[in-house]
Length: 410
Image 1: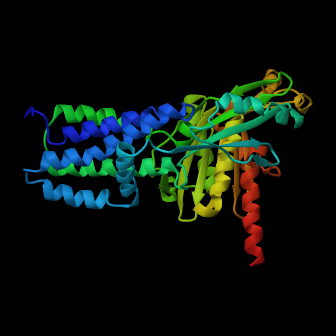
Image 2: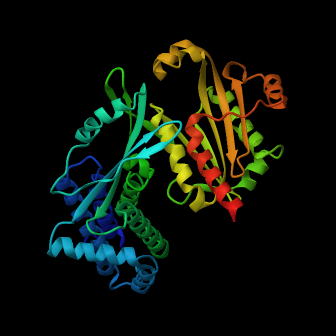
Image 3: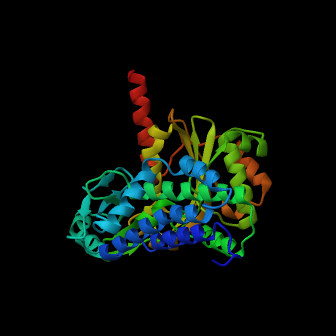
């Protein structure tokens, strides 16, 4: 063995190989290739501990490794990884199952079709599934029908989400390797290069919906489907919440809605544009910012639907939102959204809020005047109109309403 290589280099190389296989696993890839990528992942992931034991066997760090291994890898997911590695090497390829849920969004309701379940024996292209919706979508008699396709992957016959297991296992291994590096404290150029490559891997660095959800819109008049594109700002798994106190320090005056306004008005003054952003408030006095961009409206409807599904379980108490919007004469509502843009009267920066008590706020600013602080002050001090939240927030409003009604009955 080349003595210039650090003790952790072999294990890091195995970790890199495991993640490289998982990087190729994609929702639209055929079953044969996806199963091959999973088999390789399980094999290489399990080999990390083998090469660690070999590298550290005759050093003073073996006991440290064993302690850290027990802390980070001895758990149900770790056992499952070990079992799958033995199975795919000695018995059969991974028994993969894919499920797809099609969800249609509108201002009034959200409709999810029954799960479509596929295995290697009956898989079909997603384009075939989308095309099969044409008659159903035309029957809705809407100018635009917004819908998404969400993918779920399982081991056939089991209910544990593969994605959740992979993210947990990867993060535990990263913690183990980081702790070992700190204990061993050695310089190794190759190890550093591998760590940098691992940090750039996408699978565990991008939000789940970017990997497993596609957004579409069906234009009925043109009988045409369009798949959306998206961008996001994301802090990573388990790194999204911050104390409300942080906002209070930065913006000491006013209520949360005012702080939210000021923060984004300043952003807009500096950038002359901003990405739509949700501020989600939790009962433990923490908050999360969800910032994203989209090419079709389906994405914003889906995002609020996802937040609505989390309200009860995560104890969400308040949802705020800011976005740029077009204002046009209502007589153009019979046109597709992109055609209506041609008839824009002005562009506004719109702020919305709804909380668990169904208190609502809304305020908007002409984007051409946001550099004028007197104008901003006049809008903030003006008597507010009756709040009217956009249709895409209805899923959140309905969920808060349901929970409030249930609470009042107790």
